[in-house]
Amino acid sequence: MSAKQKVIVWGRSGCSFCTDVKAVLQANQHPFEWIDVEGKDVLRDVLELKYGTRLVPVVEFGGDGKYEALLHTELDQLESRLSVS
Image (cartoon, rainbow, N blue to C red; front, side, top):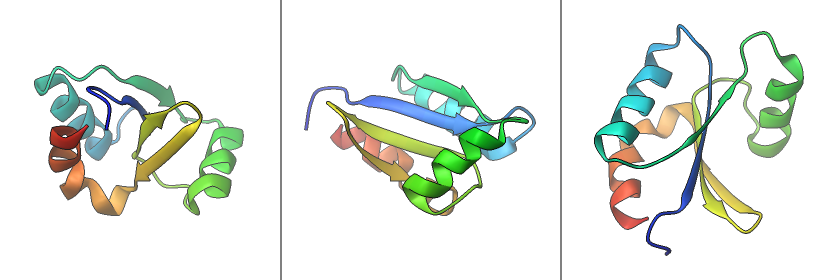
């Protein structure tokens, strides 16, 4: 894997799990893009099409048009995923 894969976090304000994800990424000094889905059903539609969920957070890893995601139920894997990216 590359030294630092691109990370995209799909979340919303007021989501404690989203805040936790951002804190882990910041503690690991891993840059990320934040996509706020608050009140934006079209963005939740995108998540549903890509990953079968409308719930956040969703953390995407990848680049060059290829992404894999950790869904809200898999957040316990975030730190180990960062250590291999």
